[in-house]
Length: 286
Image (cartoon, rainbow, N blue to C red; front, side, top):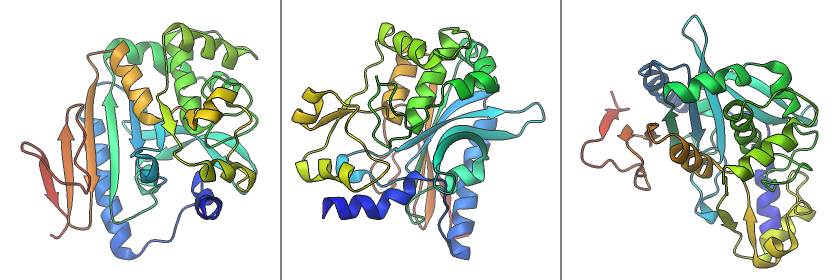
């Protein structure tokens, strides 16, 4: 059963989009408009953005996919990220409009987005590396694994590419064939430590035998035995950013079928997209 469920959702690791009704498309476009509005509210030109994407609620994980949003000279925002191209059969780096980023979700009925606004010194160090195509590609692994171990060069997932990009920028790492190795060394030295994902059942570990984009052979033996996998996820990256740059600001957005909620601060929106006192609520019923 675990392997079957994993197989059923494996396509969500890819860059394919799902079919949406007109109502669902309108809802997500309005959600994306709020995302663009919040990004445009900052004077800086790079921000960390995350979305709920793949449903990982069984592992108590809200956010599955992160990207670095950047603003061009003409004021347009795009999300630079790693995706696995199912059609081409390998991972690649590409830019995506914010509407497309917001629409990459498992459920059009409810979704979450997180924005971390970076302070000037963080952007100044990061932007040149982010927009350096050669460095971005030298950080791209040949093989993709959705559950890649954070400190292995064998595989990579979307969030691992992103945190290695942070290392390249903030560590001022020059380009080179060994850039990934040096980025991971810098992350260790700066105490980047992904919280372990508790798999909870050995049945889920069997998914690696059936799902092509899930692997275990890069994880340490002790992690596999303990059913705890150290994987780069958006929440871990956000915690690393906050620790390094305490001035960073976070905004969380969510939508259901009736409303969009905008919540400011490092606390999480309640499950089910329930607003708290002080949150901005935008009706979707108008």
